[in-house]
Image 1 (cartoon, rainbow, N blue to C red):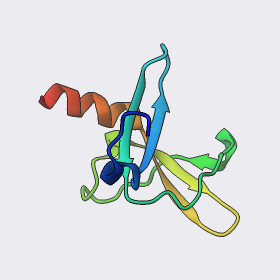
Image 2 (image 1 turned 30 degrees about the vertical axis):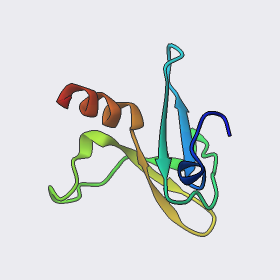
Image 3 (image 1 turned 45 degrees about the vertical axis):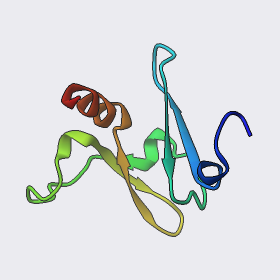
Length: 84
């Protein structure tokens, strides 16, 4: 299907569109749900004590029943491309 082998088709694919129209896709094991966060629901990332590189974290998203780390996907992919 869509030029993807049957083995690969069982994975979930995430597509991200960045400013300028650049689209990046990657497989993930599962995608149980997606959420939209209003900008007001995202607060600045706290200092994680050097355990996590803060340049890849946009902030902390507050959901009704949980919190989520909001990654700067564009920064992550730029770093991957630079390492190639």
